[in-house]
Image 1 (cartoon, helix red, strand yellow):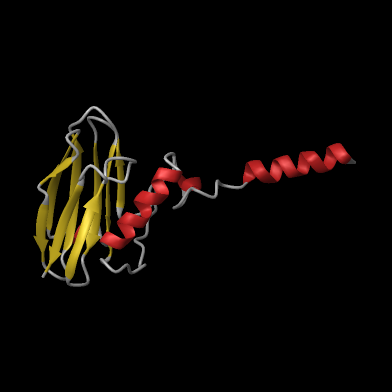
Image 2: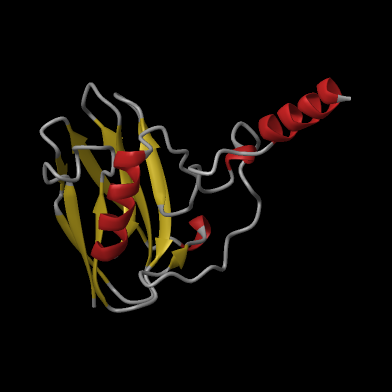
Length: 163
């Protein structure tokens, strides 16, 4: 009986996703979801790729900088970001408010292997590209940052001004 209970407990633990993972880690490796999320964030919502009014190329470098470091968009505009990691190490592009990015950066320090799967994030290996399609529904100043431990603190932050 004791061995049976231990087996059930081990199975339950192995079936559960890690508490530090966020997003739908179980969907990793599956085809991209067919629908677009309607979840509204302070900085907008996932955009429909068919409705992107422009593409903004973002360069990522091991100097812990983005190029360009600031962009301006119109309220309501849907932008396709194509982030190219020209460096030799992993980088990411995460959209958000400064408060959210700071909180997430602290969480990343505690859990550096954290899974990422949200429409406002792109985790990009060296020499690769990734994309985010985002609709900016609210005016204001928002940001994009690399939240890999040490990168945010080194200044890998860009600004988005929504007018």
